[in-house]
Length: 317
Ligand code: GFB
Image (cartoon, rainbow, N blue to C red):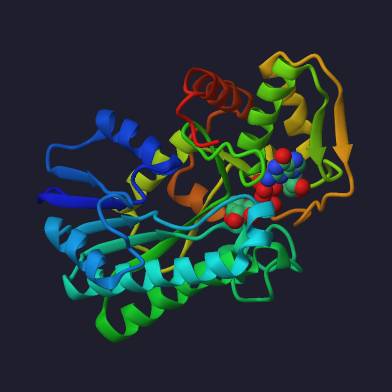
């Protein structure tokens, strides 16, 4: 990829966009121009604003990160809104990228959109082998449609559109809302409050579910690799290896230790666990990147806690 490329990143001010901006600062190549846009640059739910903002830059490559995404508890409350928002954003971005003949478009699926009743480890090809977990059905099907659109645009127009599939992402500049966040930022914010108010930490569910957590800076490096080097028509998981999967209970212990919280920890089993596990195989990723090193979970959480404490006043809470 030595010719001049213009890489447009939608969702550029979210957690992954934030990590990408920092990694690109160090790893940008001379022939690359990176442009990060967010909702202030244009509402991607509106086709005219989508066309205007993308045609303004005429990118050769697009990393499409913009999406309505949140933790399981918000998904349960707003499945319809999430479905419709993501469908309109994705339809508009794909149509404009086809119209201006973008050379490569990479969008993001997620491991939580895979079938709930499945054999493990999950492989990329299992995406449509059954219904996703009911808690995030709107999000899941809006994301599965990206896979369908990749195939349709490739068949009808020859578009080089594909998706990568991260597991549970965490890191600086996440949404730290107590109610709506994913588990790691939710716990970090809760512990921050418990330390101040000397109250017990309430963890939702049993703590038994298992997750593979990927640090945002690691995913940013993988996304940069993908936009430069990955041209397989089929999707690829980006995740820590199966052996690095941990339980929510183990996660809580790490967050408590790294936060220096000394209070009680209570598991509120009236709250749902959601999906018990969604263990994915990293065999395909390791074929391309056998030596990629992930940030150990304890180090990533320490970095995220530090960021949250330093940016508490302006963080999304
Ligand atoms: O991160 P999370 O909301 O989403 O929940 P998923 C992960 C697990 O953490 C569940 C437990 O078993 C929760 O019961 N948990 C414990 C908590 N305490 C908390 C808490 O304070 N907050 C939250 N949020 N959970 C997501 C999808 O599923 O996977 C997203 O909802 C996204 O759309 C993401 O795709 C990758 O991992 O269950």
